[in-house]
Image 1 (cartoon, one colour):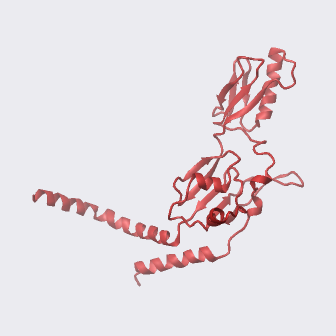
Image 2 (cartoon, one colour):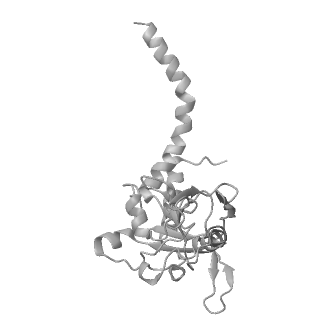
Image 3 (cartoon, helix red, strand yellow):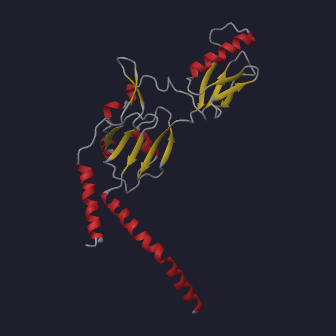
Length: 255
């Protein structure tokens, strides 16, 4: 059986990377909004644990400016008013439900005596992975663009900045503009070139991120080869570690 050499492994890696970079790629950018195309952002924000909300009601001092974190069961509670189901509702819907109780209890005549605002949006995230300084889940605010996300999580020197992918996973709800029917989409992927954005000011692909979007910054071919080599060499180093420790002990004992 033929033995595979390290050089052959590296050659396979280079070829696969070249095919990945030059081959056909999906271009689903039309599914993403540009910042100027979004008239109002988060007007349909659905509350979820552990979001924090604040109630404003100047005519009821004990309720005014009260901030609560939505409990794990999806509810909030207020003295004398009782519990309210907050999860899955917009702030305006929750405000209407609390208003009904407030009007009954305090006999207020104003049509809108109460307001609910989101104090801290802690339940929704987008994600940044790959060759960046800080990977993981980032809080979604509704106004973060792809360029802003990468400015907050700068690519490392090993990043392939011309091959960055912006991914919208499958299963995301989309509203048909004609019928108004909610459908669940297939994944959408497009490639963005950070070099063009930064050096040439090309913001044609600077999209507005949605909840659950993923930005993946791949390594350069050379960095990918280094990663493969590291994975190949690391087990050898671990296997030799006991022998190295024994050698060091013998060396110190000989002094």
